[in-house]
Length: 243
Ligand code: ADP
Image 1: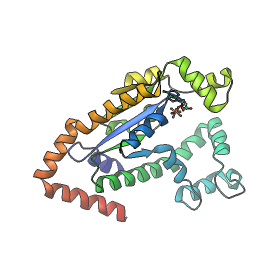
Image 2 (image 1 turned 180 degrees about the vertical axis):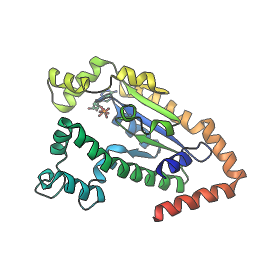
Image 3 (image 1 turned 45 degrees about the horizontal axis):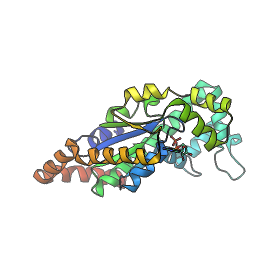
Image 4 (image 1 turned 30 degrees about the vertical axis):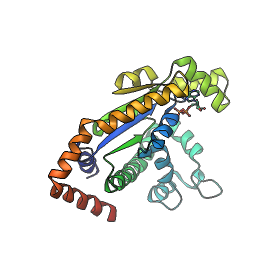
C-alpha cells in the first residue's frame, strides 16, 4: 500500500520527489536551509525519525515492549544514544528496531508529502542522510542531490563543528559510505568546498532547474487538461490523511 502510494505520488504527472543527501559535515543542512529559504518544501528525515519514537507513539510502545524499560531516560523518553549502542553491537536487534521504526517513518513522510501535494506543491525535497545507504527511497526519486566537499574541508569543518580531534573526526567520516561514491550516484552535485556564496549560487541554479524541470511543466499541462484525474488523486490522498 505504502509502495503503491509512493509510486503514485512520485509519478511525474502528479508530483516529483527530490532526494537531498551528503556525508557528515559536507554541508547538507546548509544547503537544505538555503532551499527552504527559497520556498522549497523540505521533509527532514532525521526529524521525522525522532518524532515517530516520541512518548506515547505506536513505535515507542513497541520499542519499550521489545527492548525493555532500560532504554528509557528518566523523563520517559527513549534514550536514543543507549538504543544506538545496543543496535550497533547486535545485528538482530538492529533489524528489529528498523522493522519497528522504518514503516512509521515512511508513513509519516508520506503524510507530509500528501500535505504538500494538497497545498499545491509539485515537488518535495526529502532530506535524508542515509539515502544511498538504505536505498529504499531512491526508486521513487526523480532527482538526487549530493552535497559534496573535499575530504580535508569535510574533516576540518567536522572537527570545528563537533569539537572533535582529527582522529575522532576521521573515524566518523570513515564509518560512512565514501562521499565520492555518493557523488557518483547522484544526478546533481552541489560542490561545497568553497565559500557559502559559491554554494548559494549553485543552490539557486538547482532551484531554477527544479522549478523549470520537464516534469513540472508536464504537471501543469496535465493538471489543466485532466482535472478529473487529479481530482481522483486528491480524493485518494484525502482518504489517506483521514485514515
Ligand atoms: P551536514 O548537515 O552535512 O552535517 P552542515 O551543513 O552542518 O553539514 O555543515 C557542517 C559545518 O560546516 C557547519 O558548522 C557549517 O556551518 C559549516 N559550513 C557548511 N558549509 C560551509 C561553507 N561553504 N563555508 C564555510 N563553512 C561551512
